Every structure is written in C-alpha cells, then in structure tokens.
Length: 80
Image 1 (spheres, rainbow, N blue to C red):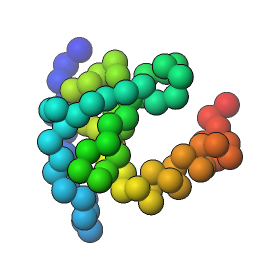
Image 2 (image 1 turned 90 degrees about the vertical axis):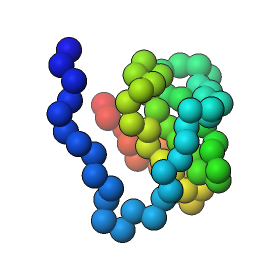
Image 3 (image 1 turned 30 degrees about the vertical axis):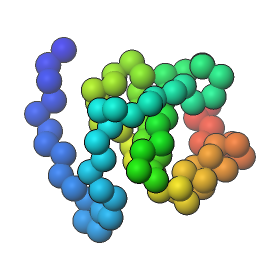
Image 4 (image 1 turned 90 degrees about the horizontal axis):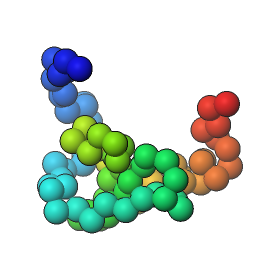
C-alpha cells in the first residue's frame, strides 16, 4: 500500500498540545473487542486504531471524552 502524501496541518483554533505518545500505556477500549485503544496522557485522552498504531491518534479533552462516551452509550453514533 502506498504511503499517504497528505500532510497534516494543525487546525485553526487547535488548543491541544502535541502529546508524546511514545510511552503511553494503551489499553483496549471496552472488553477487548474491536480495534480501538485509549491512553490517558497529560490530562488528555488519546484514541487510536490498534491495527495501525503508527497512524494519527484522536486527542480528547476530558469534557470532549465525556460527551463522546455519553453519545456512544445513547446510540448517537449507530452506523447500522
């Protein structure tokens, strides 16, 4: 598979720091099902695809994470 040539640029208004995730303690989100892992780093929550650990991680503030988890529990993100 060819590498992506898209360069990632910081978003306007982005107020989250560049986190060093190299020593993060990643754990499966949930009961070990699926491909999502999370890590708690410097007061933020990072989420990544465990099958592609080198790909970019999503970074959430605690408030954003809470809203995301609440929405998921309520079925807001049902993709069926």
